[in-house]
Image (cartoon, rainbow, N blue to C red):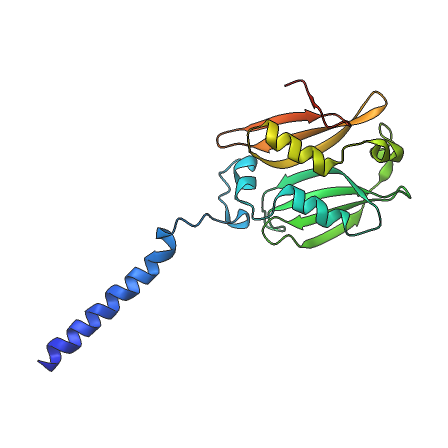
Amino acid sequence: MLNRLAGAAGLLALSAGLALAQAPAATGTAPQANQASGDLKEFQVAKLAKVGLAQALATAESQGDKGRAIDADFEKADGKNPAHYSIKVVYPDGKLIEYGIDADSGAVYKSENQPIERYFTRLKTADFQNAKTSLKDALAIAEQKAGGGKAYEAEVERDGQSVQYEISVALADRSQEVKVGPDGKVIGN
């Protein structure tokens, strides 16, 4: 009788252990962007990120005094870097710094000075200051226009005498480009 009781207790413990081992898979928890498969496209990995592009922009812009983000790219994880947003911020004094913002933690994990001449052959610092709409505001406009997708890349371009924003939004099955003018109005689409 004692052997049967011990055997039943062992079987119960084994089945409880198996149930616990399977529990995370049963919850449907999505993988983090840093653990996402290399086979996924960039926009698919970006959708898995815990940190959105707007939050990453805010983090990058908060690193200095009155900087404005002018470019943001989502990068999948590789051997050296986690999945991250690479965000370029320009400051009123003309300094340009690229920040790496971890897409799962939201932390700045690197920063480096960038050659400003490459950007300012077509854009001037005043162009960003004169734009009524910031890059962060343009993200929200683009996400709404795309039907609730998640913005994952953004670029600022010169259009005549002002800036315009080109935003990439990750949707369920594709990526959509949305252009937003300095006044916050969608261009084209």
